[in-house]
Length: 332
Image 1 (cartoon, rainbow, N blue to C red):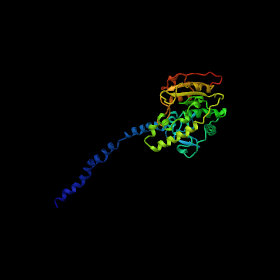
Image 2 (cartoon, rainbow, N blue to C red):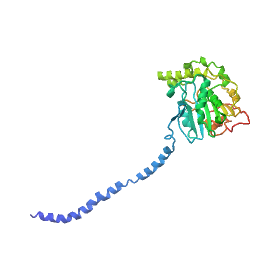
Image 3 (cartoon, rainbow, N blue to C red):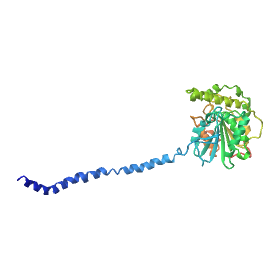
Image 4 (tube, rainbow, N blue to C red):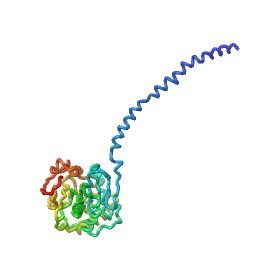
C-alpha cells in the first residue's frame, strides 16, 4: 500500500506537467502551418491573368448561318463594316474562316454559301451565270441597308460574281469597295475557254489538291463543285455598261499559274471610283481554309486609309498602283 502514496502526489503534478507540454503541439505548431496566407497573392494574380482571356473575342465569335446563302464565321454585330466574300470555283464559305477571324472585330465577314456543295449540296445551282447573279443580288440586298458600310471581296470565279452582283444591285445598296483577286477583267473572262478547263487540273492549280488528296470522298466533292461552277462560268457573257462608282482593287498572286499576266489594269475601265492593282505573294487563291489572305491590305482599305503605296499598306504587297480620277471618287 506504500506504492499508493506516490500515486497520490502524481495527481497534483499532472495539471502542472502536461500544461507546458500540451501547449507546444496544440497551439504553437498549427498556427505557423496554417499561415499559408501567401495564397492571397496567387489569388490576386489569377484575376489579372484571366483578364486577357475574358477580353479575347473567341467566346462571342461562334459561327452562324444567315438564311441559306451566308455564313458568318466570326459574327460581330457591332462591326463598322460588313465584308461579303465570294469563293472561287468549287469553293465554299468556310474558305474565309481564317480571314474572318483575322479581320474581327472591326470587320464582320459574310461568306457566300453557293448551292450544290457543303451544307447546300441538295440545293440546285441556278442554270446560268446571269441567273446566279440575280439570285445572289436578291439575297444580299436586305443586308446592305443604306448607311451601313459594306465591301465585296471575291476570288477567281468569285471575283467575277462579286463584281456582277455589285453592278446588279440598286445604286443605294452597292458596296463602297469591290476587291477582285486572281481574275482577269470581265471582257477577258468571256474570251477564256472556261468550258474546256479540266476540274482535276483546276483543283491542282489552285493548290487545294493537297488539302483533300488524303480523302477520296473529299476529292470527289471538290471536283463536283468545280465542275458545277465551271459550267456556270462558261455561260458568262460580258455586255458594255456604265462603270461602278465603287472603289475597285484588283489583286494578283505573284505565283498564280492561272493568270496569263499579273497586269490587271483592264479592271480600271469598270469603275469611275478609285482604282489600284496590286501584286501580292501567293498563288491563285489568296484566302483559303489554312491562309487568311490579304489581311493587312483589307484592314487598311476597310479602315478608310488609302493604299496608294502598297509597301506601307500591307507588309506582303509589291506592285504598281494606278489611280483613276473622277468627280465621284470615294475616299479610300
